Amino acid sequence: MALIHRTTVKPTKVELLTDWLPTRPWYRGGPDAPVLERSGGFRLDDPEGEVGIEFMVVTDTSGPERIAYLVPLTYRGAPLEGAEHALVGTMEHGVLGKRWAYDGCHDPVLVAELLSLLAGEAQAMAQSITDTPDHEVTRSGTAASLAPAGFAPEPVDDEEGTRLPAPGGSALHVHRVLVPVDENPPTPPRGALGHVASGWSGPADTRLRSVFMTLRTR
Image (cartoon, rainbow, N blue to C red; front, side, top):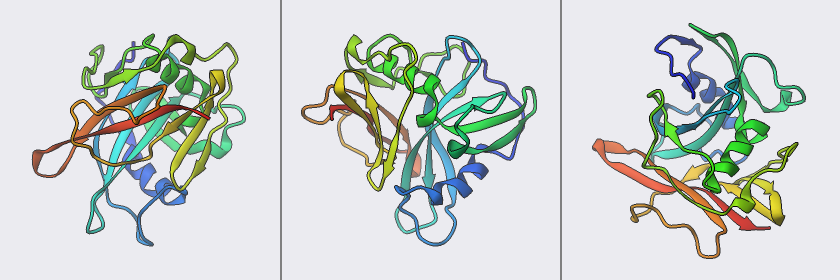
């Protein structure tokens, strides 16, 4: 169970992402720095209790159109070996001390738990409340989506988002730019082997929803 601490984090996650997002191929903003606000997300629990796992939605409000990004993150108390290229930045946590924040698509702990969520073997948890399920998160998939022991993620980023080769000859597509849909709950694209969907805060107290990840055949 992830314990949510009410404390300070310096720099904040939003500050880290303000510098990091423009370096991504799927970033849709202009030459100026994004103006980000936290809009939603959920967490997963690391069975070992060592790694923080968060799926954060941040919205760039700097342009004429608001753009919502999905950013899977992991938080570790020590560097993840071999993942220097995936480091988003370091933070000083008021309770836990120095934390290394990583693009979670490169972290085997996050990927294994995400596949477990798709397979119905893990529970999505509230982003900011300890030990509370997030029932807005919906999913579909089968036990075949579970990661085998020693599974190492090999994500590929492009302008469309992030693609993760998954077990059984499938691929997990992480939709980095979230496009709202009218369905509640959102339905997966035709032909999908599985999906994860949820919502986030929009302008004027609206609630927006979309598919966050889709499991497909390669």
